[in-house]
Length: 405
Ligand SMILES: [Zn+2]
Image: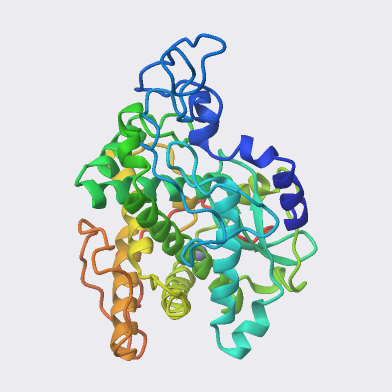
């Protein structure tokens, strides 16, 4: 879908209806539909009684919650950390249960993508500045990749499923950091249990929809930071595939690639010998450098590698909890977490060493449970393992973003 189409659809309100798996999977969470899982049901109202009076309708948009229990979400345009969405007055950032709305995530990703391009060196910027960020409206596919269409024109694409997965990571982790809960691990356990046949994404279990937590301003703010630095990692990695020339001779048509319905499955099914692990690691190194550098221009929270480590940790736990379960496409098209985590950490540490005085993140954004594995370094290239030891070769997997190969 083009940006213009996206804007048009959003203005028509279509996008709101399908805003997130949270909002769409449970009618209770769509504004105006008066039940919330785990919340008391709506009290029948007597016609003619004004809102808020006994027997009348509640003044809160969510029955069962007293008015004022839901913290106000800053209106678009007001707060520097929460930029407005041009042309969408009154547009909300979060669903009634505290999920980031899909149009917001897409808009945020577009801005971050541009910021990352703008912070590249002039020569790299020239290589990628005409490459569009595409959106694939597919909640089944959890994937992001750099590629080109059948005419060789290049793009970066992120699926709706990937955005939702990143937000679910951000929601649970932000709640844990704010309230000391264990939602992140609980959610992965639930998700792992249910991976049979085809990898699938799940909404948060009702027990995690405690609105006093999920709508807490501190949690929402932290959720947005985690989402931003996670998508910055994903986008920075995919951009690097382009400017590092990893896509080879197939993708030489210049920027402006398009994806038609069904293409994403077709591309993902292209079977090739294996993911090019060295290129993947190089893209992680470049992508992390790019996201940390671009993050320094943020007015408030300077992006850290915490989002990257969150993404890596999430997929590692999911795999470990259910070995042999079907994998999300993103897991198949990227190296093993054991390889990626130390590369990301070493790159970020090296970046900080070479940028004295730079502050990144808030000091506690990295998941503490991410494995700390020693990685032998290549001279001059921080975090790049020589010969990529321990990297599993996975036969029969597609190379992301190289259609036709
Ligand atoms: Zn990659």
